Length: 579
Image (cartoon, rainbow, N blue to C red; front, side):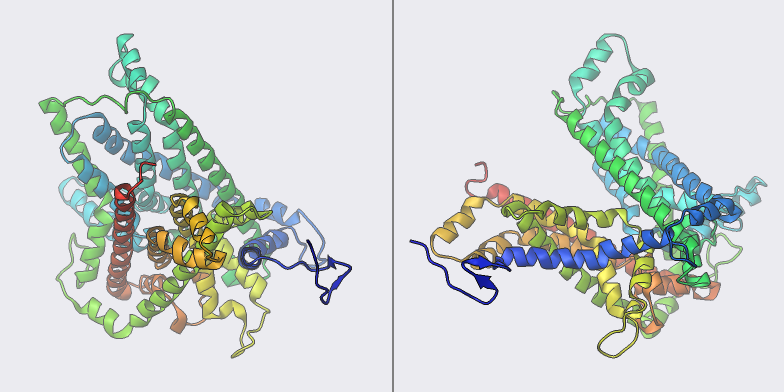
């Protein structure tokens, strides 16, 4: 028997606005949030790039003006050149570490791989000044070279400095992906090549490296996009002839209505989307390659005495190079005066005293901003993961696509989009434009780090059997109660890992926040480091703040890995885990 109850807005059983389920309402709210703070700001940037400032009509004149201007053409070429050369040098650093530790029986392979990932915990702009003091024209290395050999090498001159800093910081992306590919190569293919007489470099060049190419290209694409979009490193090294710094300088210097800032932002988005697409494509290729494996990776062999000495020498040299920014930052943080000398004149704790007495507001702001953003990320990530995986709502996949699209949006572009979209929106409480409100920084950080939390939440939910929810509901539990009392507790490991990852990376975000800080009292840690590093007298305190930033990211990375490993072991040991 069926019946219906008339209600306002319905007639004869027809409902103009049908009642939506709780999950549907949640999905709509999330979609509106992503539209308002991700899609619309980026769309606004793209729209203005094609807008004639005088007539308001569609035009390509802005792009013609861009390519007719020598400075912008030079910036475009420089950005592409720096990104490409950073990939080359990152490959030179990562390839020996990956190959030696996966191809040979090598003592300390795990430690070497772990040390090789350490550069990721230091934001590149933090180590840029320290690298200048070590490798600059009058830095430690060049002073020693000049003293003993009478030569100086322009390691940090102009674009060279950006390439060196970025290569050292981002090479772990290639190291991680390439090592995984080398471990997944079908051993039988290597053995077949050896049976046909291939060995040494010929075997590596013709067989091993081509089989590992998908993983390598995935890492290389990530390096390219990260370098192409980076803002802080060129600014701190005073290299302004690149696209990201030009976008920042045009909007902050010329004004919010300057079309060139939006044209540059559009180009940054296009290259980011292309690089992200290429990365996903190559990762899919890597998955295809691993389905063919039959022998568990490359066959390992022992090194001879001479080979072992050479291998250790190469690895120690590489590790000394990639860990040099951390050493330089420590020397700068604890040093008194460091100028025209290989080492600081003395050591002191005064810089940390300055930080704790005068600059703790940067730290407290960061804890508030990054903590709130990470909490928002895991709430959104959990909700999106549940809607995408557990429901049949129409358009649910688009929530995943929109949230993941944040990976393709450079921080400087998102910041410019917020300035353009919200500069005329007045806050209903306290007055003032929304674009300069400290809360918009939290939203920007949450949008930028949402993909990390979403992936962690999705992985956690996929490991929970649907039968557990069905059992709870068969015993009378509502859908909301099942999610709150069954699903979320079982996802706690992934949720916590997503929170820590989002928090640690948001704590050192500069590209978006530098555009949105309305007053110094609202500035986060990354912005404070940037301000201190602008003058030689403030670099010591800036380095001390940088040490705090590195500690935050390192602790976050460590805790995230511990949480993931603990959750994996707990699931493996649980009854019925094999099923």
